[in-house]
Length: 353
Ligand SMILES: [Zn+2]
Image (tube, rainbow, N blue to C red; front, side):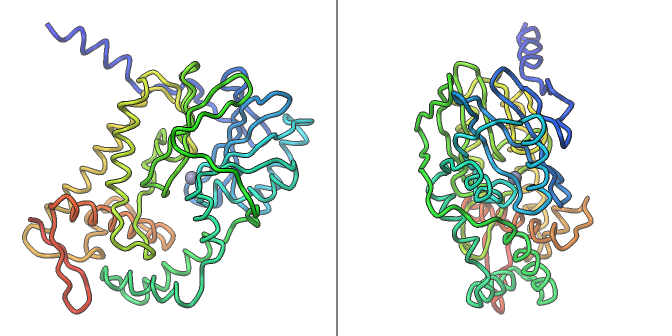
């Protein structure tokens, strides 16, 4: 009796990628009238970031700026001399403080003399990243990783990565305009609701246009990869994963299933709720592996990394993210009462309750 409903629902919510061909380095793709998509290269395994342009009167509002290196500047120069020739950027909205999104904000702002919009937390977090690398912070980071069972050699690699990764930004503009959850932003003929969420970043900005069912999801919901959700030394007991799952739950209850999602990486897609469920299930699966591994003997985060990331061979860059991700799962499970922690000789060991 219910099979017909099921099939209607599952086909309506299946993941679909209406624009499987992404823009090349000298191209922009029109997603719909007044919405352009560009794609810049990144020097990581995650090798690109998406930039969107929204028609805004005589010019365009840019969403995210790209990574702060010479290659991104060259890529923008090619686009502004090619398909975007004569284009004026009226404002720049940066979704969050990670260097692939905020990196060239200073360069864009200077070139077009336009304002920068961010959430307050993400702007201040960008300032924090620009000023990191002091001896005190390095010591705090070292202690944090040691407490999770990472030895000195590994910690050196992780810290080396962190410094290198987060410094790759152009000089951040000295002022910004604030976007807050619940704000309405008018961009050209469209009205967007500002939605913010934690987990991947502290207070990442997403934009939703109800009239066009258009959702700019930033890195909160990606088409093909699971966004990094980590814990860092600055807030060792942060429940990033709990924040992330709460944000996903809120998105799935407030947005329609048939919105077109424009993510920060990957390709535009339909099937928001299906994708959200996949992401939540993926984290629950990892929690299950951790619970299983800590049932017989208490384990450190370091010992749990290969349990959760058994399919991957990790370089130092990826190991840094893996360690942060693992600790996010552990902290979440502590909050949920699924694990207990015990410090033995200053190293945390976790046991399933
Ligand atoms: Zn990103």
